[in-house]
Image 1: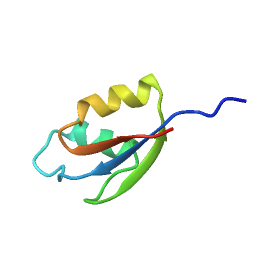
Image 2 (image 1 turned 90 degrees about the vertical axis):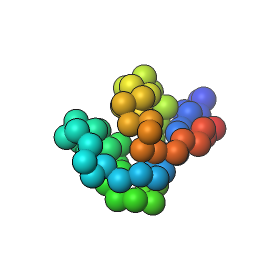
Image 3 (image 1 turned 180 degrees about the vertical axis):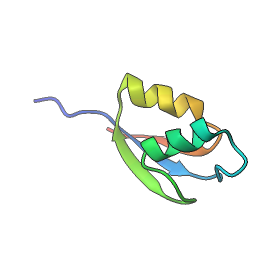
Image 4 (image 1 turned 60 degrees about the vertical axis):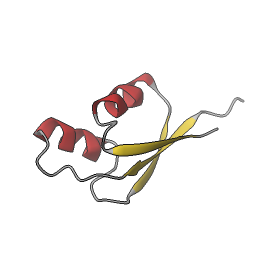
Length: 63
């Protein structure tokens, strides 16, 4: 069985003074504090969420 690709996200900027939608997107990605790391499956939905908050996170491609 093939392994699923993953993406590791790290929050590097604060969502303070950002639109509520961006704060909600960070929470949906499992990020809500600076320095928090989340590993998620690489799906189109996650990629779309990532694009909305790309200026607040750092991305590492997984396997």
